[in-house]
Amino acid sequence: MKALRIILASIKKADIDFNLFKENSRICIGISGGKDSMALFYALNIYKLYSKVNFEVVPMMIDLGFPNTKLDEIKEYFNELGTPLYIEDAKSVYQILSIQKEKQHLDHLPCSICSKMKKAIINKVAKKLNCDYVSFGHHKNDAIETLFLNAIYGGRIATFSPKMFFSRDKLTFIRPFIYIDESIITRLIKEENIKIFKSTCPNDKKTERENIKTLIKDINKIYPSSKDNFLTMLNNKEKLDVFFNHFEHKIEKNEKYYYKIIEDLSSIIDEYKFLNKKLYLDKNLTHIHVYKDNKFFGVILYLKKDKEFTIKLIKLKDYSDLDYILYDLYNEIYKKYNPITFRLRLTNIIEKHLKAFTLNKKEKLGNSYLVLIDENPAKISKRLKDINSK
Image (tube, rainbow, N blue to C red; front, top):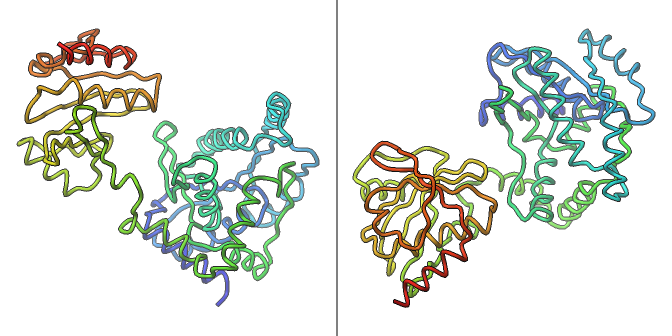
């Protein structure tokens, strides 16, 4: 089967799965001149002829100021295609990267800084070109490589998303090649005689991503099924089974208490029955269920925004050990995110049972107060020991 047919079918599947395209949108494509972005530009211009959604493709390129960059040839190529290439002058980026390379004593330009700057520039240019969408040529292999990079260097299970909305810039980022293997893109370039342009980035083929790419190729040679299964894994929510799915954090109080962070809806329905009021389904809320002697004991809900934490609700069957329960939660958050802003919605019953905490800056909130907790957990721990010894 021709590569173009495979790619168009894969774009359609990604569109169905992730709702990638919107009627009458203008999609700014980040062009680097390499095979992925050139293939994306080609494929989307054909896909829109068959798609039920009307959209416009706008190619743009950033001149980052890398040595030996010559843009006349690529500009001429796009003019021949009948779609002028917009080029943003950002030559200062190379100067900034070179300075950072010296400051950080690196043997190459810092890719992370470059990536952030490019995204900011693309966002700005997309708005200038009246685009509401931005599209990149990241493919299946890129997604898997990013997963490995995040696991090895970041200690997290994460890759990029097929679709993201940036509320500040009111832009949607899409990756229509998310289901496409890199080898199919290479075939498309050859079969359709698509012109590509050599990268002038000094880091080209010299990054950690290249090492990961080699590693994954070696794994695929030994275990051929891994080539498809890595992608299946990224979509296999039902089979996700990692440590945090079994999280039960023990609270210091004669080992009676522990809590779980709740993810699945069935447990939240149990919470609704306990609270005997509306269901809290705000996606920004963290749901914590407290257990005592392995029996359901209470609910804590908190709102997280960056490093700001607000306890919106605490309801327990018995509040006599509230000091220990709240201290443990505060201590865990403090250790992980400090410096933090930690607020608590203070009701009469909570205030009555909190003895180890210093509650500052009371702010009226309906029938309750919003208070700030801003002291070192070690001080609270000492008070708890003093209270317990009496």
